[in-house]
Length: 295
Image: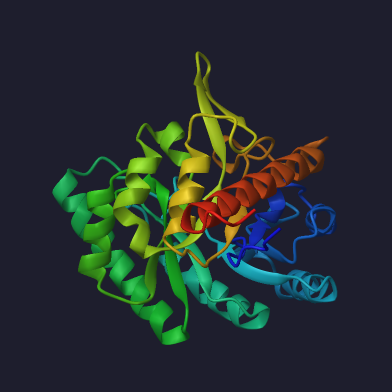
């Protein structure tokens, strides 16, 4: 048997999808034998809202667990912050996260591109580009990279707008975060979108979903309609070298006010095991297509 030379894409997860508390988040990651974490909230508190003592406790616990922090998932430009709202909240959040990133040894901050707040498309676009350009300038000065997610906001559901945003901001401090499951939730073909924006993707969230009569339902990776396996194959074929960060939404859905509870950690671990299996299948298949002798 040959051992193929293609390494699996590294895996991590958004901790609060498994548990509200950091100890439970770390425990779930350890069960999966994953050595990194993406942080969004701890004890229901957004990272940027932690007071200094709370943040120091998070930093120390992550260090003691030997975990790498790969990204801070911020609220900047998200579904709760329309473009007509105050920019102060985003600037203040980025200032706090800049200091936290330095302490945690990470440089990625997840952002979105603002709901429209009733503006016409032209004004909405202008304001979004202006704000994100300013944020990117600050991020670049701090050595950070903002990762725009294909979720809520002006450029969230449209590849042309994503590419326009990248072009008009024109900063190395702005890249894309691709979420495999958001197409089902927001009504577009995620696989087709990934094909358009793939060279600009620096980070990936993994979830899967189906449309039901009651709305969107979330499934284990590979069991829904999001095309997760196809997305993984595209990433693998393109030589993607970033992280796959599990965000299964099986129990935790911030936009619906749902926090981890009950068997959330068990569901997270099951989703992680399924993701690991999909990645193994994808990388093996990719290796075999390049070298038929690989087994």
